[in-house]
Length: 168
Image (cartoon, rainbow, N blue to C red; front, side):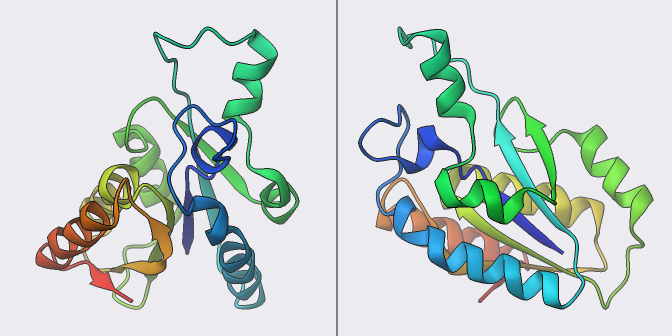
């Protein structure tokens, strides 16, 4: 199972995105490749859409909508997969419970995370799913994630590793 975290225009487009993460755009080809690999294995792919409403966002409504949309080529790569909208850093406990009811908590299940930001939403979602699937292997693909800074990216990876989340 693969989770693609918050690869939306506001986080990925360094020119126009209100919350852009340095190097997020460089992840896109690797993310598309990982999605394709998961599809070949028949694994489910989910992606999160952060429903941020910024107080200081004085953009026109259509620009705000653009910011919430998946970044360019990811629209096509993810079109047949399921979006999970979230209001804060992680999917809701209700969404996690729904996933848990859909999929068995199995020691052979691997749940992988890629996307942005390693130190915020990737971390939060990995912990949420780790709690929902305690028997599964939870893994973060470190080279297909970007953090607020390189230092925070690495610190988040260290924290996740201390929580028994695998770092690949």
